[in-house]
Amino acid sequence: MLSTLKEPTVATLTVQTLLKGPVEVAEDQLTTFVTPLLGFPQLKRWLFYQTQAGPTYWIQSVEDPKVGFCVLAPFQAGLDPDIELGSEDVGDIGAKDVSDIDVFTMVVLDKDPAQRRTNLRAPILVCRNTRMAKQVVLQDTRLPIKFFLRDLKPIGR
Amino acid sequence: MLVLTRRINESIVINGDIVVTVLEVGRNGQVRLGIEAPRHYQIYRRELWLEIEQENRNALASALTDATATTPPPAEKHSTPKDEPTPTGGSRKT
Image (cartoon, rainbow over all chains, first blue to last red; front, top):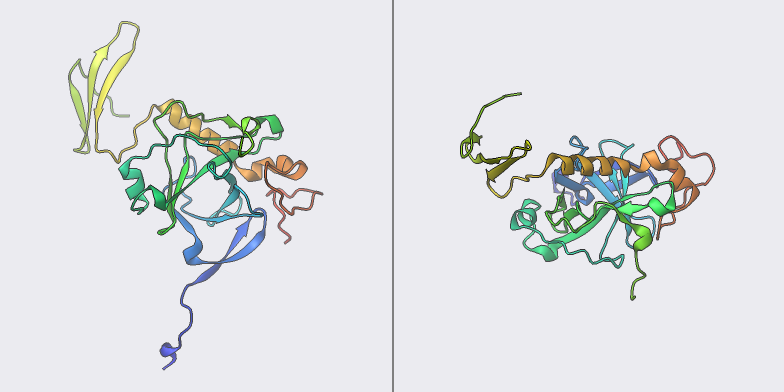
């Protein structure tokens, strides 16, 4: 009889975030990396969150509370990198086509503001529907690994 | 490390679906390799791989406590108390 109760069945868990402290999230709000971030092979589940609206996001490892990154949504930020994805990249994260995919780039928040940069060569692809993600290394050598944010032109230039 | 000796136009097969062929051996020590593999294998020069791995590590927010504590990143203002950054670099109050 108890089993007939219509309670939400999505499990929640507490994620320790670098910027917001403990955050309660539903399991299905987490993003799973099908191919891990390079250098962090053991970390699969991540929380994407924002501290304010805009192109800047943070990703937090669920498995390791010390591991968090700032990431940028480059298109929102006014960058227009020519990102060419293979069909296997799209399919790996369960996306039907590129319109299902959000793109983020890793940000290095260097102590020296002039050195703050983002990696356009190895973006993170996230499928909106499946919440699966991967970091891809693009073959296009014109995309810089170190794109300095000081070179970011204001939107609507 | 497995070491195999191959001549020009000879190949090795990895896991049944990857074929690496020696195409050219230059006098300067340069070797040209041809690689046939299913598209889902990501193949890169190792230096590129290591460089991106390093840049990912550089991006670790917890290693950048000072940067996040002194000046907010571009287009970002988090509500971290500006005094005494914790070792984890965040605003966690525990």
